[in-house]
Length: 183
Image 1 (cartoon, rainbow, N blue to C red):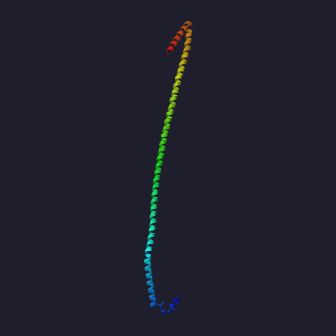
Image 2: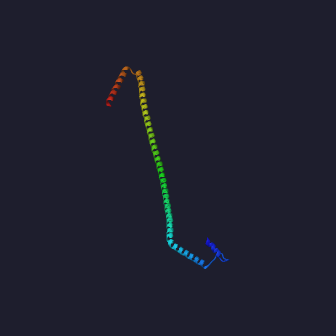
Image 3: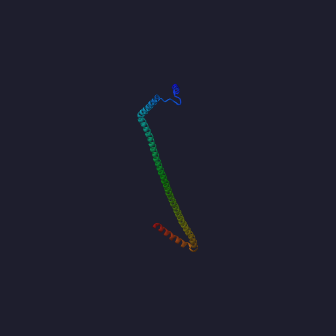
């Protein structure tokens, strides 16, 4: 600071500062020192700074590549999951279709079984009705025979005397005995 004051006092009038030969030599030396220092630092630090910047650029590029690979893997996984979802949907549709088909087949089987059972019930009912008709026919025939026998007995009793009646009874008994032994 004192030097500035001293320099300011020694400045010739009309100038802002004094430029003499010593000041110019000092400025030249300082410029030379700055150039040497810049050249030396540039020579010494250029390769390390260049390597540092290259490593940094490589790290950034590696991270970008890793990000792209992760993105590609994620897209691949998304595609795989979408494909699996499609397969699951297809399998679901196949299962539903198989279940529908099985339900239709089971309903057909149940209907066939019910029809068979209904036909069986009809057949048994028809057989039962036919058997009852036959039984009723037989009962009616026996009733008619009995009624005819009674009518014939009454008619014969009025028209035939006891001797003829005994003779007819004996003949009928003989025929019945012969018929029983033949069977």
